[in-house]
Amino acid sequence: MSSLVLDEITAGLVAGRIIPYLGSGMLALVPGGSPVPSTPEALAAAITARVSVPHKIRGRLTAAAQFIENFKHRKTIVALMSESFAAAVTPSGLHRYLAGLPQLPLLVDTWYDSALQTALMHRRDWGQVQGLSQSEHFGTWVAYFDATGAPVDADVAASWSTLLYQPIGSVTPARNFLVSDSDFVEVLTEIDIQTPIPPRVMELRAGRGFLFLGCRFNDQLQRSFARQILKRSSDRHWAVLPGELTRNEARFLAEQNIERIELALEDFSSVLTGQTLAATA
Image (cartoon, rainbow, N blue to C red; front, top):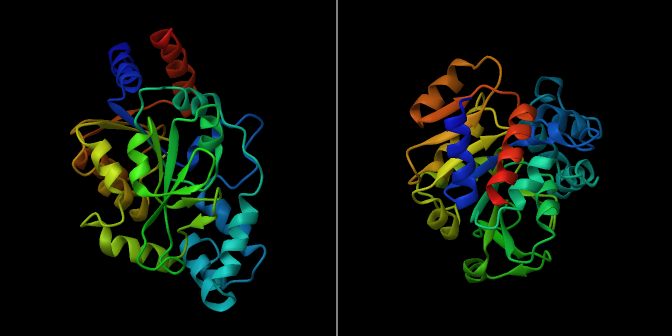
């Protein structure tokens, strides 16, 4: 990564022109290791260790969740997800630096933990919007919560300096999870016309770039969500993606004009947070 790219990303984050988009890989930075599942595969293993599912779907998170929902009731999968993410997650340095940027209008977090929420707790000028399962909240796509976790109306979000968007839900404050096949079928049926995406998110993404951290794009579901959240944003984005890319990942990066930063996330974090400190001093 050149110093020019680093300077551009740093300046963009500080000025609120670049939106961080976090994936489950961010948990690799948690001090002492993550106490909650940090990949879809690990989460599938955690829930199927508690409830027996057919062997052929045991490693597929959405299919395993759907089987449990069908045969053990929706409440069972919600309880299993809540147990899986019950442990407090200490925010990493990168979580804290992103949460500390006062001009950052939007953060996107696409995993179920609450590390970024915890990192934001020193502030009162933020709130969050989470995706909702249609099996539990039919006809309502999202719910808003203020900095204390209290539910609020959508119009309150316009007053927040920073909006945290969690499109597949989170364990806190209300145990909202999009995790089963039917959860995602409902959302993906409507997402092309942007129905499940909050209007405030649409407004804030306009003209801004995205920085993908802890994300992989080797799964169609992850690519579909990212593609729709990027819609009508800037035409330039970045992704920290070490290691070999799959053909689908490479195609997706080219399609969305995402510049790859081939660094380990830990190394990128160390460099970025140092630059962020210098830029905000």
